[in-house]
Image 1 (cartoon, rainbow, N blue to C red):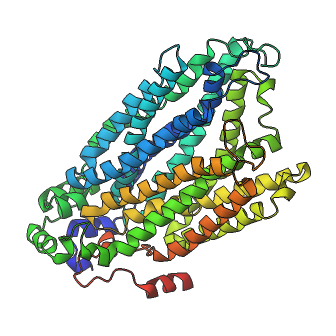
Image 2 (image 1 turned 60 degrees about the vertical axis):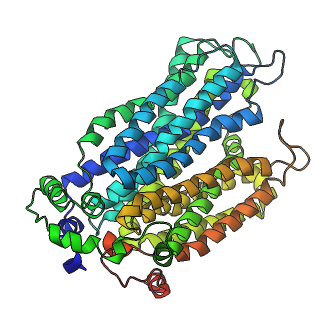
Length: 534
């Protein structure tokens, strides 16, 4: 393969780990840090929004967001993300990764600030304005998925490419962690400043006027890391693979990478023209040739990401059981509004520190040893086991004496999501498609995942309602036990669809995509069986 490959791409594949690799990880990773902060910080303040804008005078419990409003506030960013993944994924292949990379960041900065400026005395006006800017914030975040993954895969060497892309994605864990820590700092500062009684003591003073600043500060803080990253994103050169294989400028690709790697690289314009004129480098996304070569690959990446996110974002189903079991979050009426923000943020921080972050970094450490296929298969398998172990004896876990075991099972389920398909579904689409379609196909795969997130977070929230005593504002559902059984089946399907995903460990991007090979075969079942046997 090396003989058919451009020298600049061969040099990237064989390069030792250098400073520019870490620079690329930090620049792309800070984008993902911001993405996670912005997407997950809303869960820290939704209870506070209910207390401020939907208080019912004389009611024994604090105000809460109506179910439809809560669904809109929490899901609108996901809808924007899905749209952004498709649009910016396509645009990244048309205009180049670098040009589009700056656009997504500026959208995130502007909309993070605007989300906190939803000023009005009318709750409806505040929620509409908040949802409007959260949608466009999600739109910018969506662009970061395909672009960050594609840029990192095209900069990395083939030996440690999986770890580099996984490290970018692992910054999501730190974004969630910092979101919780910052909310704790803000809530603690307000607690120290204002002596606020619990709701049961004084329903009016329990939610002081100043509490309205808390959620705005938390949402607007997401603009800071995004703004700090913008300069460095604009300093990054375009990836050599885009410049050479898509823009067809061998001289520019060689010049850029020679400067970055500090080595002499020959341009090879003639060889580039030979490569790009091959049939393997001319077919489009909606062609029979793409379907033959990569149709099953795209089916594998979209279905596994969709199924994973249904399970991953369904954690809302039993998060309240986990928190109440450990005593992290007591009943709302026993707390003030500021105390409730503090308690929720502390719970999210502990979960991120103990379960979310370690799972990501296990993947970083082991993905180039175990391979993507094994980690994803293991992750889905363990999630299936733990989901069924939670679901089948669910009445057993509900007993007070067994709640700690329930929490352990819950934590392990999401540990293996992060040390498993939550990371690999992000990595694989950036490695197996041709350069001219790489960002687009990653965007399609990621958008499929976000559709699964919407189903998991909100479809299952309605589905899991008790048959006889649903929560206020919800219709009767099938119950948490039956919902968990369905989630176990969802994870089991993830095991089977993983068989469609090829192993990219130790291979160049061109070898995986078949860009240098006219006789490329799409999915080779024998390759999957070899990987499973290794």
